[in-house]
Length: 238
Image (cartoon, rainbow, N blue to C red; front, side, top):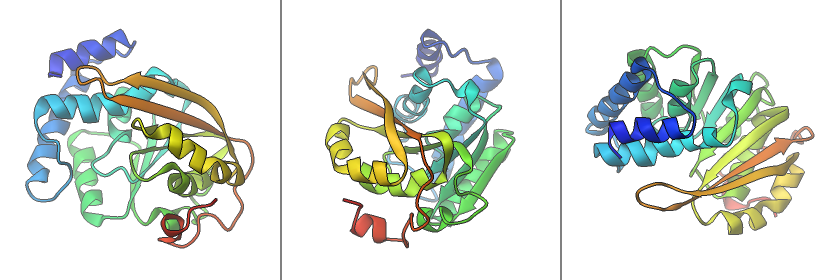
């Protein structure tokens, strides 16, 4: 997917990019490739693949969810900024917080945010388990996103405690989603959410399957969650 195809594909989904936004994606790509030579941010570095598998794939959540109604968004384990920064470029009003456990990635994101002239960006170097217990952030966000970070039973514990009551947790998954969802039923319920919507689609050109799960926060998360770093992964809620 070259730049022009990317712009057209978004337009077909009702997202029209300005010249400035097109330029921001171009700078994003160049910055990603440049920094990737110094640190391992992504295995995908050729332009058509970055535009398809990182940019377009990240924005795909906005084909199904109206981000105009979202004010604050937290992205857990965003790595090189996916999905939140492509979404932020398309919806500049968003106040975005990214939490990542690797300080190098936070340095990259700070630099990226500067060169893209993004406002209302907040980067936190922390394990998600610790972050979710900080009062300033706990149950404060309209939406929490995560893309391919961990299996759903683990991811739920890292993300749901950050969602405010009535807010949403959006998990972007590949084809294995259905099995993960079964496995995560107990966690989803205990942590205070219910499955609100599910969207399945294929990524254009390569036709790989994608699933987006939207969970709605219906009650507060019990104080004990998230548990200490490493615990959710070792023994997910079952």
